[in-house]
Image (cartoon, each protein chain N blue to C red):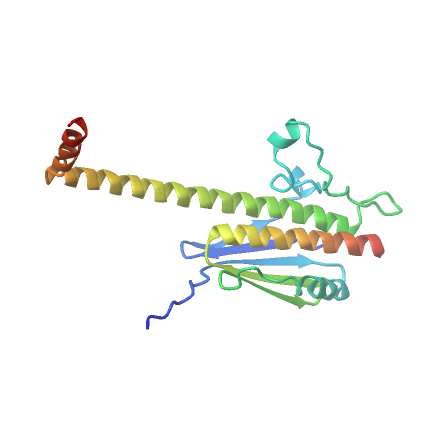
Length: 88
Length: 128
């Protein structure tokens, strides 16, 4: 029986967002990480921090999926940033 | 303050950087060009109820650090969206061109092979 191999995630984008403090960067990771990825076979997201820097690595099968996924995550980051701004 | 940045890679593009340029308006607003309703919808009278809030000011009347970050992210998001949309259009045009070339090639082959006989037969049948 022939196996179907998933498409390779050949398109990537690395995003760095400098927060004021490491606590804010870690808060962002905690807020963003639970969001489910609708098509994990086509799109991956990894969140990490380096001090106050939030680092996000996106991988995707093509530009279209990457555009949708990246824009959606940036929209969420802006909401997180605005929320922290309002409550700090 | 540090500024957000992004780096794009694909099989045919290596390390395409997206950097914030504070001298440009797009990095100094919370209203993105590629997010929210289209200009056509707004011109038709639609009110954008999900419009992003304006940047927050501190006690000195300056934008807060996080407001500046949100504005810079908005500009960066526009840059990435426009770049990837352009690449998607290029890929689509390339695909259409290849399909068109293939169609012409097949039509020429069909004509050279005398493949138009079937059409003549069908036309004859329909007349009868």
